[in-house]
Image 1: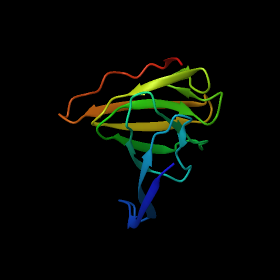
Image 2: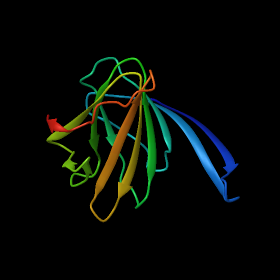
Image 3: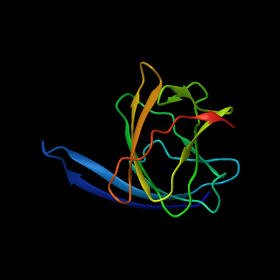
Image 4: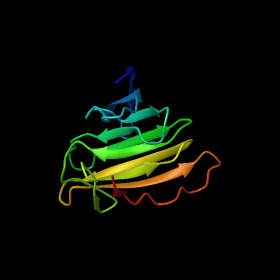
Length: 133
């Protein structure tokens, strides 16, 4: 796994100090894991069959993923977690489209990552529905 970090501290609209980090992660055959403290991850991949894994998360966790030139597959490090209400782990995965920005929000009550995307042209990306590996 390859990872580069850039962390910046800023105040949100209510004056609270927050961290914004940008990381680059290269998808791998076995699955490169996103760090739990990540907020923005740029994903590179050399083939659409490579994998990136979502981290274990806390309720309300917001994660943004930007997939660069080649798409990849998305799974979870937590076997029971869901992506758009479908379990993702060892047996299911969601296909991510190249040149797309995805926003994910985690709900710990349901164990679900709700994900939506925006294509480079600014239009809404197709819904990601995980399917069998």
